[in-house]
Length: 262
Image 1 (tube, rainbow, N blue to C red):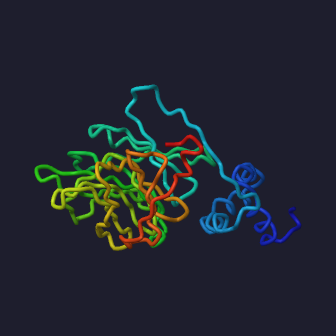
Image 2: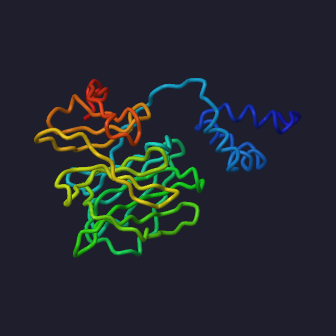
Image 3: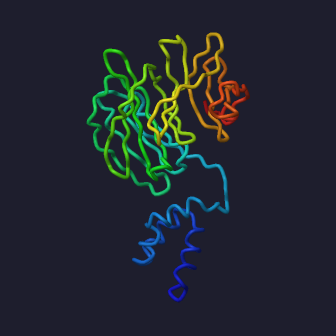
């Protein structure tokens, strides 16, 4: 292998799975430098895998009653976040990479969190940065604010724009360069979907399907489309066939219930 040109070695390494790449970093300093370089990492993510398959990961992250929950980055494919479900302890956020098994606890958020709404985690392609989002509400008017942690700068930032909706306590979802969550609009008197654009750092409100006595409990991305699950029938879900088009909501069977996931 030492006699092969570097570009051929790189081409071979790009086709290895992550676990094999981690072991390959121990071969020599040159390989470690190559595999750890951001350009190599991006190229590896873009390259189609030879054995594309659905993978499941089971986690045990606390005893019953512990106030921890999982925040999954839908658009990142290879990172997840854990957070403490408590306003006083909400600064305890840990990023975990299932492939490398590496953890990273974020520094405390210096901003005030009166009422915690939801968390989100995703990749900002505009800034080439992984970000953690905390949606909370401020007294006395329960205005929604967003705090953003940048892994590139290792700093928290509070977005100046506020919104009048009240975020539901659920995991937020990343799609099309924006963070999405279900919120209650006190002006309209019913639930809505809020979106926060990464690049513009602006809020956007989208209509949610309205059914009598329906309570929307989960927001997901399925097949590249935004989906919401209601409380009346967990085997069904609403799918937004055209992103941002309120009239494109369509009701269909949820593939997750077939697998026993609710």
